[in-house]
Image 1 (tube, one colour):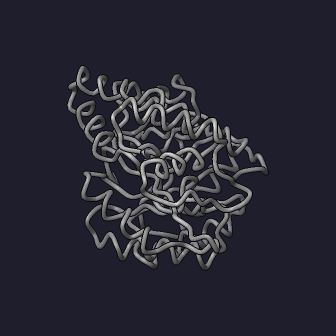
Image 2: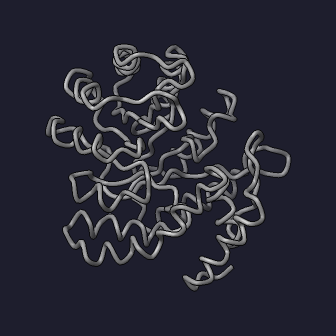
Length: 295
């Protein structure tokens, strides 16, 4: 079972000055993503600042996104937690409001064992009937899903259909690709390695830069999946400098600064997240100008 292939976007959550969600702007962003060939919307992930959302708001944002998308592309909801009970409850709520799938980050801070990771994903899987994507991002969580654990979960835990790999370890990712069951997918969790990872057998990306360049990054991903590596590489190289700049002051500060420079959103994050430093903002503007993007 596959939720999507190609380029899904880890969509931002726009906020008003009073810290409430700007649903009007959020709806416009969703429509713009779909009009520009995004293959899936991933809502309330890291880039969506879900860690700053109370549970009720978290569910409301997922529901709004599901209703706005209205079946045009899959909606995948971020529901992972360092508390398994909380992850199970949020996953059930996301399924109830219509999410097509779940993105479940590994438990963070408590540094569980590989057996603990297995039981965590099994508990979520036992509670829902929609597909689950594991999310491996040890730089944020302090825990990594080892390749043998990922493959074990893929083989033994129902409806875990993919892993979003953001470990930065391409050898580890390749180990999963080599040993996974046929019906299990590896998805890039890092824009900068999407092209090379597709050449190894990944099926797409959950993208940050896609917030600003959905059409271009979707095209790059599709070309790579079709085996047109030369043209895909040209697009990849066009954005290399931005891949790095977006994370200099953390995510989603970088992408929100870029969207602000492009005149698309207000540059508002929720504490403890703050906007990028002015030096980073100006560096982003400089690259956008070099790409002939209006700022």
